[in-house]
Length: 172
Image 1 (cartoon, rainbow, N blue to C red):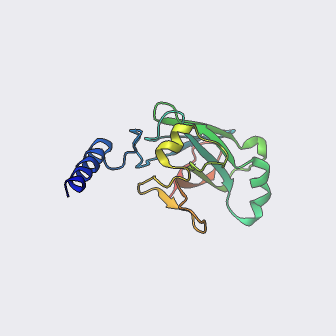
Image 2: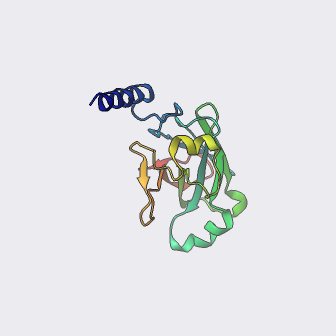
Image 3: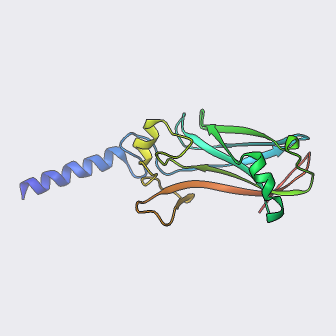
């Protein structure tokens, strides 16, 4: 009985030290990502903030919406790795050189996928904090990937827009 009480006290102390939503590494596992973008005559700049640690790698994607635009998806190269620095990230997509025309309906996605073995690879401290497959992640932007034998989680958000060379607005 004494041993059980001792184990309970140790567990409670560990929970108190690591806190809710925080891994044993001290990194907040309640993932939060914001995103906004601006367009100019050549492309789109994606930028945002996150509570992910410096060095974590996000995946930024931009692609046209609709089956008729599928060839542009492959030509553009959908996924671009973006490193978090000081709680911020930014990436510029030059869509004009890819022959996008004004009025093209498109989608921007930014995601965090700490899955060991999936590119882009994360630094080891990311896997320690969030798990080998993101299984330790929490938060309203976290999703579970269906169909796998293990729990696999990611986090992210999507913005729809119509590309115009200047003054593009996000659509709800």
